[in-house]
Image 1: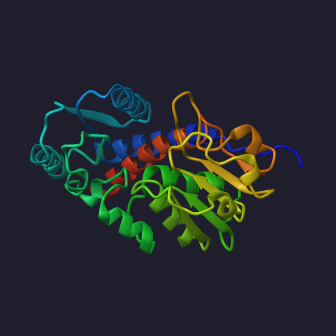
Image 2: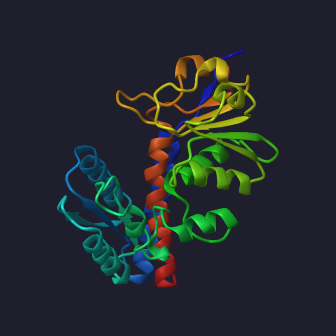
Length: 282
């Protein structure tokens, strides 16, 4: 069997950002309103600071205004909720991104729920998860939304396929499983307590690895011809899938980096412009 074709998230993300920039320019021309994304960061975690700065730069390139709110590490849950409530009520802000992690002393769920659903362009609220689960209008969690767009780009129809999601986080594993289910896949969730994980993964036509453990999924675990989406990112640019061995058996596979990562930010920007469009009635 020949090596798997790479699913190029970088190239697709670039096209999505170009389309988003055109939509943003059109909105601004018609309404005089520029889409605005507010980013909120608690503390100065180096990786988070870098990530937020990258999102700000990408926003500017897409014609989206960026407003950054930097809060001290000692910010309380109530103080953070106050900030998010103010941004939710600000008509000049169309999307809100709360960067995590935020510190163990903060009630993360309470903070997320302070974001108005119509501005939840990162897809982190209970309202957004419900909309994803029921197939209703709303904003998808960005990484799962990006994964679905990537599958569409490569003509992968989940209908009738066995999809195995390895990971159950609230913003990645759980929502991507619901999106796949909404597209008529038969979905199995796996996690750290799954018995004989390899045996379950070997049944999958589509594998989504999102557990945060380097090279957990090996080539021998992959069903020949399966589609492998590696949403893991570990130090040293290593994914949750052993890329070299998995590529020998898969039909399609995402590289790390350059696969899922760029799609996450592209989805965030596209959803910000969509939020601005809805809020302006344009």
